[in-house]
Length: 429
Image (tube, rainbow, N blue to C red; front, side, top):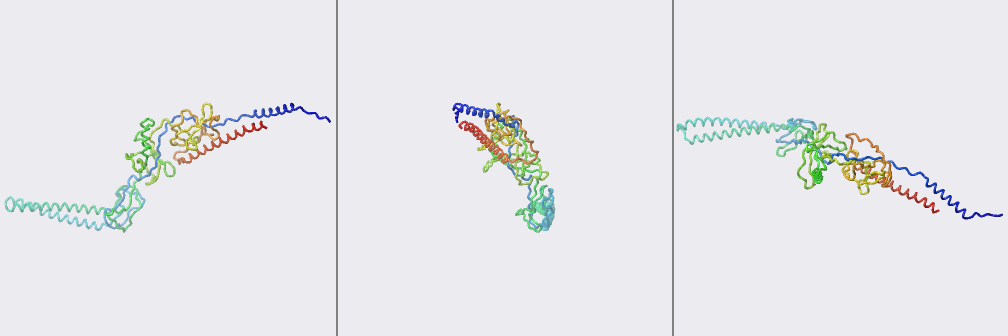
């Protein structure tokens, strides 16, 4: 049996043809699709410069009802927590000792008045007699002095009667202002003292209500410098708008007015006190509540608004955004924010008019990637009066998106390296 050998040259040619065919099939694979991202085109916007400061509420009027005479409390004539009028009687102190003192003062006054009548008649008689040399000049002078002393006794008697009447009036403990009365500190039968100024109750006026907030002297200095350099335009000292954020995160329905700013910096805290006045007809605000006051201090005409979902944060906490250039390639851009307005970050540095910011699909892109930009579909803003978004949550979401984007980029790079390694291994084989 004869075995024919195939030449080695023919085997090499056939192998090369198979390898070339395989490579041709790999090169004919369809190219990857360009990712689609939602963008917003930013433009300079007039944004109010708002300072959000912590504060506490305090009553418009606070009147402490204290005892002004000594005595036993006979009765209480109000309901705790009720609204009382100015001049309304709250307590009755035993008036018997003061009625007796008034009667004694009146009797003393009547005695002094009777003595004054006698002295007046004596002076009138001596005046005629002294002219006729019937009495000495010394007797006449003594009669005039006694007349003056009797007149002084009458004046002292009248003052004693007035004092007794005032003390008797103090047995009716009345409300000094119109407001809401608090807890009664004494009960019927209790002994109160004027010398100790015994506290009996407190009446407070809640409508309107004061809100005292503190601002650091550094923030006040920056604000004044921005106004002087023209970066901010004030709306006028009497037109500043103040709103309140309550403890549950809701915005108070009424707007307030700035009353004054303290002109002295607290040496211990380095802050100044700002007082605002708010209507409180519904008694929503109570004295001592912790609130946050948003004070609109001016207008920044060169700010940019970027949706919060489009702002990322790197590991150092630096805020960044993805920008789409004219060639539809993505680049990362650091920005400087100065707070939020609704669902947007207020960007004061890092962006220019017409920049296209990626706000949807940030986890699909990385710097230098080619993308297909389309207008972003954003959710509608929340209804007015809804609880404000937690800043920590928004920041955490941004950090999470940044981490997801970085992880996506790392995975994409790993996949690309694996894909490029596969043909090399195949060629080596």
